[in-house]
Image (cartoon, rainbow, N blue to C red; front, side, top):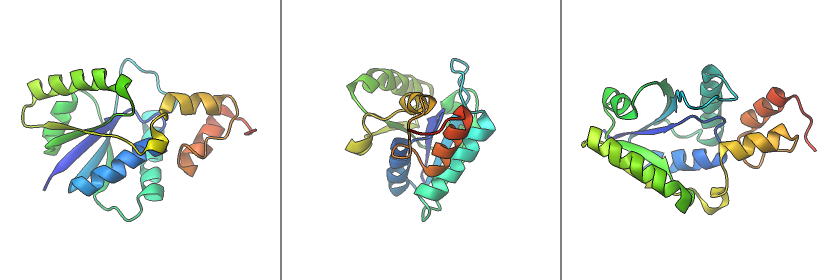
Amino acid sequence: MTTAIYPGTFDPITNGHLDIIQRASELFDEVIVALARNSQKTPLFSEPERLRLVEASLIEYCPQRTNIRADAFQGLLVDYAAMRGATAIVRGLRALSDFEYEFQMALMNRKLAPNVATVFLMPHEEYTYLNSTIVREIARNGRDVTNFVPKVVAEALKEKFEVKYH
């Protein structure tokens, strides 16, 4: 059985993330969507909120997929991958600007865990401009984000910012 880890802060999870997850679930026997605790970021949503949003989004976006699950971890990704028996780390590449950072991380992960491959997937073209930071900013300013995130996430953002969409 091949297990892949798709790590991220998912603050919040977007349709672009879900597109990558869906396609990864077709390539691997099991995909673990792993919420990372990043000490360099201050997320809008707490870890339990993000985990709940990821789980609800997976049900909404990938209802037929039984090989996807969500989890949270802290520490090094390669250590978490080893603990879960993963042979791959899935990373999304939206644009050339993502590549340099992701390439450095992939090389470091390969140095630390040579038996874990990094697999890069590009999202569908309609999601290449999309990221969590942009979605948060749009929601913070009272604009509708339902085209960019699952309904449950749009509602959570609306509640978090206590705004009415234009």
